[in-house]
Amino acid sequence: MTAELWEAIFKGIWITVQLTVYSAALGAVVAFAVGTARTSRHWILRFLSGFYVAVFRGTSALVFMFWLFFVVPLAFGWQFVPMWAATLALGLTYGAYGAEIVRGGIAAVAPAQREAGIALSFTPWQRMRRIILPQAVPEMLPPFNNLLIELLKGTALVSLLGIPDISFEAQLARLATGQSTTIYLAILGMYFVLAFLLTRVMRLLERRAKAGIGQAPPKSGGILGKLRIEETERSTKAGLAGGAQ
Amino acid sequence: MSTDSTGPTGSPGSTPAASTPGRSTPGSGNGAELIRFDKVTKRFGSNTVLDDLDFTVAPGKHVTLIGPSGSGKTTILRLLMTLVKPDEGTIRVDGEYLTHEEKGGRLVPAGEKHTREIRKKIGMVFQQFNLFPNMKVLQNITEAPVHVLGLGRDEAEERARELVELVGLTECLDRYPTQLSGGQQQRVAIARALAMRPQVLLLDEVTSALDPELVAGVLDLLRDIAHTTDITMLCVTHEMGFARDISDDVLMFDAGRVIESGPPEKIFSEPENERTREFLSAVL
Ligand SMILES: Nc1ncnc2c1ncn2[C@@H]1O[C@H](COP(=O)(O)OP(=O)(O)OP(=O)(O)O)[C@@H](O)[C@H]1O
Ligand SMILES: [Mg+2]
Image (cartoon, rainbow over the protein chains, first blue to last red):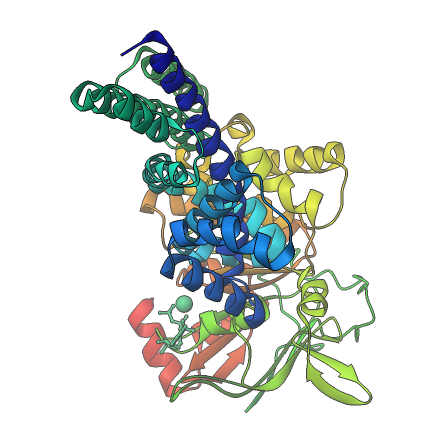
């Protein structure tokens, strides 16, 4: 393995990270739009969003990506930048899975919360935005974390479009050197580290979100986590002491 | 079956400041009635819960609904709060149809927007409090005044502080609902409903989810509100002492109909209907 090959692999990491972030951003937008539409009181929105989920869950991200990249130019005489074709395919596909998480999270909020919202004359949209979603989102974060890791690994598909992500560079390096064991062990480690970092970020978000709805954050390791727990415990105790007067 | 809980018969002595006769009724309504049920029928599947029900409530009156479990008391409050829709008949609040609109001389089911406007006149306190767990106490109270009534944040907060003082929870403004006792949560829920300045307050067994030692405090608060404001109250309760104290009228329900009604001292002391007697001897 030469220094150049390692450098190419590290550049590949950056491509993989970019793809993951862009597709996740698009996927999150799709997930919330489609997921909330699935609970709408308008049948047409429910129908369209249900259709979307059925289509994108039932077909393959890879084939969709090929469509965007190879068929769209033939049909429209216009070529996607490979990164954008990949982001679109991954974002729209994983967004469909995300929509199911959003729908489930919304359904898990107690119906009494909706009724309390009606009793205060909030509009349906205000109920969703101010009451339901803030309670549903903390519950959605653990399954979103799983999906995000699936997405990270799913980005490897783009190597088939010739986008130089980690997997693509690994393949090149293997062809150049024949050191399959070393290279794939290194790649495995890289995906693992990326997934681990994603999980840490999601945990942090989850803890924040739970604290924001008055739930004690789940106990877990990490200096940051410990600091946070002590902080909230202290403020809770102070509050209770104040109330006992 | 028609039961009129309005009218000049009013309530004699035992309810001191309850009736404030000079109260003017806002809105376009007939001054004599704030709530009117006309031949309301509600079914759940084959179960007819309310059967051709008529009744009216005059502005400022406190009406208590009593009756055996499953007789439809909660359903009446939920109809008024538009959490369920009537199958037949109409409900009017302050002279306006709640779930219907007049279009071209005909009554048609109302859109969400119309219903929402009328609904602003009604507030509800639930058995299980139903506070918003994602908001601190202050925000629970200010959220609807700000986003539904369009009040400025300062004004809404001032209103909230006054109410929190009324319900005796000044020190809890900065806590989440999960950090409060049941009794405290219910007081916040009462403050939250009052912050919308509703004309009608619906109370559905608001103390039955509370530990026994917390019940008296919440009932005292409601007595206080009943006696010092001119808000109309419709309450379902199993606390007969409380019902006696605050009610102008008591409606006894059985099987979806009002079988007896009148001022509390009459209903509780000398009920005429056999079923009422049985029910009262079981609960008193
Ligand atoms: N959403 C619903 N679906 C089906 N049946 C319902 C529903 N809500 C109420 N019912 C039925 O309607 C009837 C009246 O219920 P309601 O809750 O109004 O009684 P209630 O007088 O408040 O009784 P309780 O004193 O036990 O609270 C009951 O038979 C109940 O089973
Ligand atoms: Mg009930």
